[in-house]
Figure 1 (cartoon, rainbow, N blue to C red):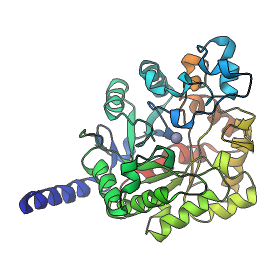
Figure 2 (cartoon, helix red, strand yellow):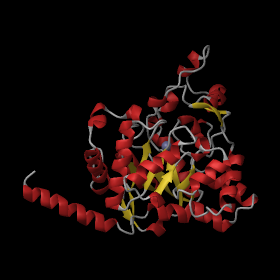
Figure 3 (spheres, rainbow, N blue to C red):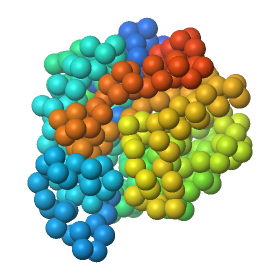
Figure 4 (tube, helix red, strand yellow):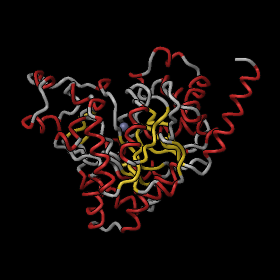
Length: 365
Ligand SMILES: [Zn+2]
């Protein structure tokens, strides 16, 4: 790059940044925050999740390759990661389009699509889905967990990772001009690996420059969310503009939850619709049911956190689509909202969780 090309790119970046202040960045460009409406803050519309395949129990090996049929839907529900084809949500774009039309009909406005590098982010598909359905879709910049980092990624310095993330937001990702409106989900394991720490620092540095939202996938240990916040904070990240995902499988003790909540991130319960006995990746965890999730929401509201809470389904396998007998992207709007209202959560509080909190989080500073 010549010096004047460098200067042109630099001033193009400044101009791009200024134009994002006070806006939300979707795959179709910036929009006014008031346009978002009800928002699911953690979903996937297309991805491959083979990185997280879990072989089935001894004696059930054949089930991993069986076609998806009515007779194995319950097995799939309990063992979603032990079936190869179930992990290829990328094959279901037509079904997802139908789902998004139903989501709009149910009163949904926006979906944050958290697929990052490592699990086959597909921005042209997201842009087409947004055009076809009228649902605002916000795409994610950055990297998923360590097992999906390429050798090239692992060798990069924090500064290089920061530049890539900033570029994905300001100019477009994956060789397209389609821009990402959040950083994340940034994947972390437990313990957090060195490569993941570099990505976290890069996310914090990019956030400092862009004033943008960040969303984190914590490792599977109650200490993981707090440790991620510590790494981000040390790197200058804005925790008040950061979402901690998957709390429903990570911090089950209410005392520990309140300790974590004090750190000031958004608190996301994003596995609504998941009704399984044990958490497949950490069998010691008794997975909460949707009813228990709603109880936890009511508890956090009572403790004063209604401005910090977000909810979603994190659909990332086929069996959760209505096409395969699953709950689909409208489950929260159709079933969970009435349940919340019947359990002492007010309409005003529901609106905060579904409209105001996502809007505040997603708006660039
Ligand atoms: Zn996710």
